[in-house]
Image (cartoon, rainbow, N blue to C red; front, side, top):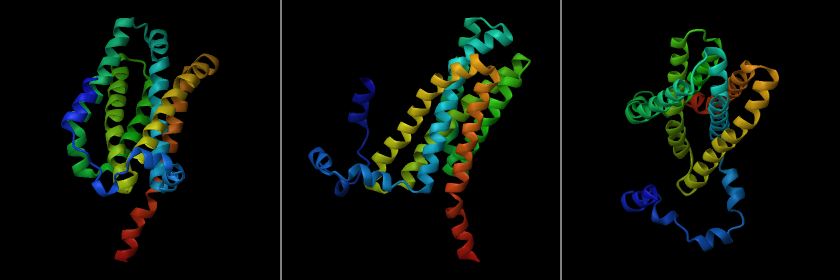
Length: 231
């Protein structure tokens, strides 16, 4: 409720008046959904895949982490709670202090790709950890990665969409992340208890690699185009 009031009272509408339409016109436009999907160019499709991957990896990790941490490190619930708190705090700090300077220095695309690499590294480090210091490093790295990924990828998506499709594109990106967060716990349990704890981490890391590959392919045209012009 407070967030809604604050949004209505303090935030200015970003959509220019010439692109606004009444709800009745949006409902009457039967092509709205199909045109929104047509607006998804290869770069936006890459962002969809990446959001799905990170959503899956984060929710899968969080759903099995208490079982894994108690089994491997004999941690208490209080210690596990502290680890989760540290992950959230790192994500919050990265969003408050790091995302702005990093985006200005390297650009949203580089920050998004780097955060995907960090997710993969964290999911590789955690199942190999034998000391609690390594466990803490993996958790903090994961918190840093997801804290940078979501704002950077959302900003990147808005820059790729036309002004009249930004809402639809952001909705699609968020829906992909939500789908990943639904699929993560649904698959993490069967993988963890049926095939071994490492499979949950491996699945999250593998899907994130797919997202990273999609980003590389999706933005290959844009990177190559300036090079061709210069040549």
